[in-house]
Length: 116
Image (tube, rainbow, N blue to C red; front, top):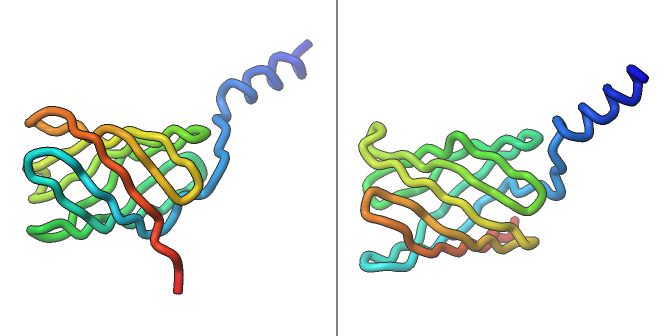
């Protein structure tokens, strides 16, 4: 009985990680001030960290997670003065989703850059 309970717990507690999304992604954001950023993601199991080349310096990717094809992470810049939350879905080398900022929500897409 204990083995069954442990197996059920592990099945619930360990999320499915379908793919490794580590790499450099070219992300495009729609809206009033449409922009394109290079975001570097590093995946460790279900967790994501990384950085982004932003117009006024480097941004930091934190609080990132992937579960199956669902992805979410926070992008901070300016010493935390600007915080963006990105949520979306991954399909191979493409991501699509919604970016939430203090100004509202806008759609975003990203394509993984091919390694040379």
